[in-house]
Image (cartoon, rainbow, N blue to C red; front, side, top):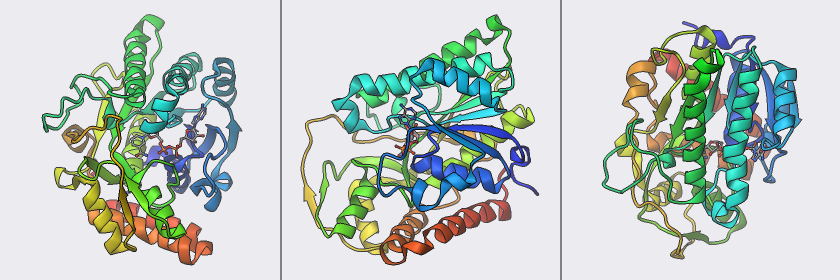
Length: 364
Ligand SMILES: NC(=O)c1ccc[n+]([C@@H]2O[C@H](COP(=O)([O-])OP(=O)(O)OC[C@H]3O[C@@H](n4cnc5c(N)ncnc54)[C@H](O)[C@@H]3O)[C@@H](O)[C@H]2O)c1
């Protein structure tokens, strides 16, 4: 069985290709034979997965464009004429969103609207997969998993900007018949992503890696907060299924085939506390010196999403347990620490092993 047959030779615009998830996506799309066009800002961290694993060599083209510049985005999409679009570009962090709410809404909402408009006006585009987050749900913390139809909200500027992007997408979806435009617009809502190559500030695994590599303490805000943690390849897998379905015209979509929202979360047993992640990273890599520093800013204590729709209708299930995901993550950072020239090979091997595992027990 060939996985994702429609990706072969498809022209795919990836926004945010220079980021952590975007870099893994580009390696995966290249593996399945896609022509990748990147649109993003240059990598904002040094080191970056993009540079360390030479993502640039995977691309048919790349352009450094601010997604909030409407004309630049419209002209670029019209120029590339992609078959489909994977939209990852975002200001993706909660804490910086408190410091710069305008910039966060500008990139995450206006940037998404610019891309929707560019897709609507470029008739080669069959569909868009827009990545939002599990934080789009209005979280009253009753401990029940959120299904896709749950009310959206957002307790901080980042979460609210992603919920607002979902609203804009829904408005575009519902307006497509008025524009006589056939376009599938899916959104994908995932949990906290772990995996090798994330160097963002204010995230647990990169903070942990910096603490070990620089022999400094790690500051933890809320060790009891429970989150859905999942390996980046599990998410990439979900995105590739949606892209493949759009390209093949398969109707795993809604009846009108306008696209819909999909949760991609881990199993409930992999929704664990920050403290548990710290203990497991100590086991798989090295113990860190932990300093507690409570924060004034709101953070949800619990957040669980229900991914049964993606399991039943797309055949998507995360094949890795939390322990396997953390072991792979630790392996990647240990390679960076001890043998950085092997990083490209380790990244490729982890990617191939993931899709070999999917192929052995096909769920699609
Ligand atoms: N990492 C996670 O835990 C997580 C969880 C849920 C959802 N997400 C979502 O997944 C997506 C990717 O996240 P990531 O962790 O890989 O982020 P990242 O910070 O590593 O990458 C962000 C990408 O967006 C691009 N970008 C940022 N501002 C831009 C602008 N104004 N114009 C053009 N490009 C811009 C950057 O250049 C980069 O390529 C985001 O939409 C994020 O909200 C991430």
